[in-house]
Image (cartoon, rainbow, N blue to C red):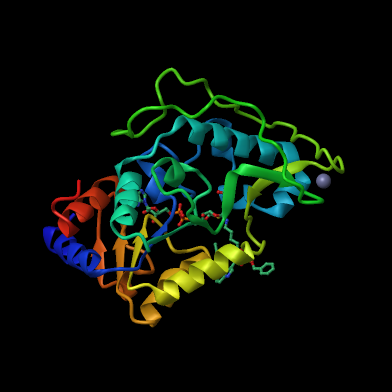
Length: 272
Ligand code: BJW
Ligand code: ZN
């Protein structure tokens, strides 16, 4: 991470009043949650997430897809927010008009101190009926771990192993159809209220901070473009280049868990 970029990003953040923080899977990578394009583990290595995250995959093999999501949900339950999540909460505490928009389906922003991020791609924790959309209860499991944020990647020691294999989804209590994960699959529309809230926030923000997204999946990837088109500076945090590089005022190369706390310190040296 270069000092010059960080200082410039810090100046932009210190001058902002209504920032948007737009996050992707890289935000949770240092909590041990694999990104969408990372190698999967165990049985799931044999499958391409881009093929499992589709309505067609669930229609063809509901147990395979439900088992994959249950394994991921258990992985997230064992993970803790990392210093990047806490830095996003610190920005929001400093600038109450901050809007956090996430593509992630984990709950690490909430557990890191951002109570209601705008969720573009749903949640691992909101299953619903695949036929009538009635919300379904989560299969019972352990509470998330208490304690300070992680300083290292990887699951909690001593946590029970997640399920690893196909699992028959529960049946809807209303109509008996299989319950599905409450996430947005390829080819499905994003939740209308969340997408409008995201476009509205990006249209009226005075800084957009994009963190840990490959910016390859649409329409979410257009959110930073909306802000840039209307004149707001865009600051990107990612270890590698992305298609957003060209529209960014500043590209800070590095992991979110290190860059975001440093960015908060650069903006407000008294903050954390
Ligand atoms: C770090 C880091 C560290 C690592 N610190 N950084 C226009 C053009 C082309 C195609 C389309 C288009 N418009 C629509 C489409 C089709 C499609 C699409 O975008 N396809 C592309 C792949 C080409 N989009 C859709 O189908 C969407 N629906 C739609 O358009 O509907 C139209 C419609 C309208 C009306 C009626 C009906 C239909 C839906 C998209 C849904 C995406 N869903 C997923 C799965 C969610 C559930 C699940 O998790 O299983 O969402 S796909 C997956 O990608 C997931 C993510 O939220 C999303 C974005 O990924 P993200 O967050 O960017 O992660 P990665 O893994 O890609 O990148 C990680 C990044 O982190 C990398 O850059 C790393 O370098 C970085 N990183 N460590 C910081 N420590
Ligand atoms: Zn139903």
